[in-house]
Each structure stands twice: as C-alpha cells, then as structure tokens.
Image (cartoon, rainbow, N blue to C red; front, side):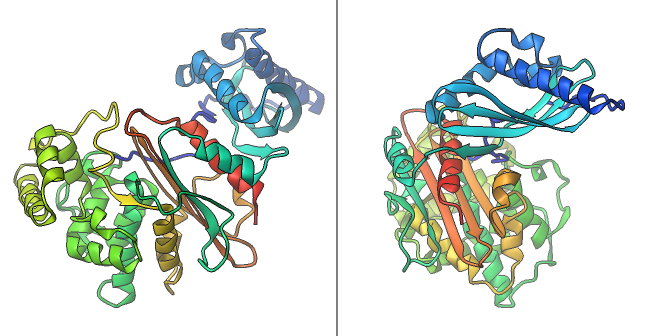
Length: 429
C-alpha cells in the first residue's frame, strides 16, 4: 500500500534537527564557521575526511555515512561527477545556503550548524540542471526498468504535450487513487448533496499511512478534515471512511465520469483495508483476481462485512517486495490522471484544489515558479506515482503525472524524484 509521500527527494531531505548556538558574532566569524562546515561536506564527499568529523551525531543517527555516500552516487548518476563547492551564503550566525556544483547541475539548500560547528541539518532541495533537455530526460525515463507512463503537458488536451512516454498505459498508481475519492466528494458537494462541514462519525479502520487508525471509534470529523488528511497525509483510515460515506458505487461513477479509459480495471473499487486484506492472504488474492467481475463484487462485499465484524482479523502484507501489482491494485494511465485533474480544475469551488496544495511535494525554490501547486503521490514496492497539478502566473494549467511499475523489484525512489524535478526545471512556466 502506498505510504506517505512527504517529500521531496527523501535522500535529499537530509534534515536532522539539533539545537544551534545563537551567540552574536561578527560577519567574518559567521562566514568562517559556515564556510568551514560547507567545505567539510565537500571533503566528506571527496573521501578526504570521515563524516563524523563534519556532521553532528544526531544528524548521522538519522542519515548514516553510507546514506550520504549513496546520495552522492545517485546525484552523480544523473548530473555527472561532483565538482565541488560553488557558493556559501550565510543567513545567520549558524546557518547558510550552500550551493554544490556537479558537472551538469547546481544543487543548493539550507545548512544549519550545531554548537560545536558541526553540520546539524542539510536540506538539498533546489536543483538547477545545466544544459539539460526535455529530450534527454524523456529518454532516461523510457530507459527505466519495468514500465513507465508519463505525461507533462498543458491541462488542455488540444495542446501538445511537453513530454509523453507511454501516456496511455495503465499502471498501478498506489495512493494516487485517492484523487478519485476527492473528486467524487467535491462533485457531490458541488451538486448540493453534501457540505464540506458535514460531520460524520469515524467507523472505518485501516493500517498506516496516516493517524486516524489510532483515533477513538465514533470520533466526529468533518468531510473537509477527512479529505485533507486523505490527500496531505495519505491517511488510509480517512480514505476508507470517505468511501464508506460516499458509497463504492458513487466512487465508481466518478471514475467513469472522469473519462478513465479502462474503468473496469478499477472495479470493484477497493478500500485500502480491503487491499491490505487481499494482499495479506495469498489464497484470497488469487481467488479474487481470477474471479469474473460479478463474483469479485460478491467477494468484496463479503470481505467488507468481515472487516466490519472483526477488523483485527486482517493481517497486512509485509510489503517487502512487489505483490500482485499488475492485477491487484488501483490502475490509471498518465492521461487518465490528466483528465481527472481537468475535472477537478473545472470545479467552481476551489476547496478540493486547496486540499491538494496542503502538501505540494516541491521545494520552495521551485514552487516560486508557479501560482498554484497541488499534489498526490503513491508508493509501495514496485509502484511509484507522482502527480502534480500546476498553474502558472498567467493562469494556465499543467499536469505532470509520472508512474513507474516493476513487478520484479523495488524501485529507485530518489532517481524518479530527481527526474521529476529535472522535468520541471527544464520546462518551467
């Protein structure tokens, strides 16, 4: 099941918080301290000193030395050899923005120091490729192992795509399926059947990601709160509660209304708990996948009743490797997701879009290029999806939807995220 997508490049978001000194110092001392620390980071990556000499213990507890080395390898794989330190711009006595140079990119972000001058936090999230091109990025996407479906394009289907790699291929999308639930809810509200401030009683239970599985039974929650937790935190219990409230049939109607090109692949529309239950029981999963659609509907209703009676009977899978991702999942193509985004944009009420913007999954430096950034992603072993809804300063809309599936192995999350950021940088608004 898709876990959270909290972002942006997890290996780049090397942030371990340590209390830092705030003593008043001269500009020269300030510059010297952060300059030495930044040079220390470079020395670690060049193998000249150990990470223990440069990084605070709390940082290394969160990000071990091997992970730092793996990050450098990842970055060099996409941007060429590491060159060195390009600039250090102090922002306080114990913090600065550092800019590192690779052969084909600069990568920058904030760095903070601990009391002893060691690096306590480093967030490298501003990537500026040099000499990159849409064509080269598209070729790298097409060369990834497994299967890919990508579209980076204006929301208007009459306008040409910026990048399209198998845009019509149906892929497992993990928790990105929750956008269909959001759209179904938003359209019921638009039609006057519900209100965002309607209060429902918490009855559903699922497994993480999320927090609501730990909340008391019968807790009152507004539809707005449930939708916000479903999208921004990928809360599975919030998702299942919304599906229960709206009804499976209503979600399936929304899938069809969105223009999904193979809606039957999404039916019967599973809750997260139902997917956990099936993937955690190989015999039940095989029986479900091999059954005709009518029988699948019966099996799901029987499963839903069992979950209601005894949710503790569900044993989730370990998710240590891909599990039936080609047959037991939620499926959509990149173009299907573009059509769904267009349906959400067409809503007069901006609430659904505001909810999508709570966790934009984009570095602040990149978000500044856009008037609006909304996001939902999904992941599990063998499945990655990242889908952005974007509006430029002129008011025009774009979508970047990227899916990567490989039933044979887990996927390189950092590599895929870097490719997404390169796409956005290579074709800004």
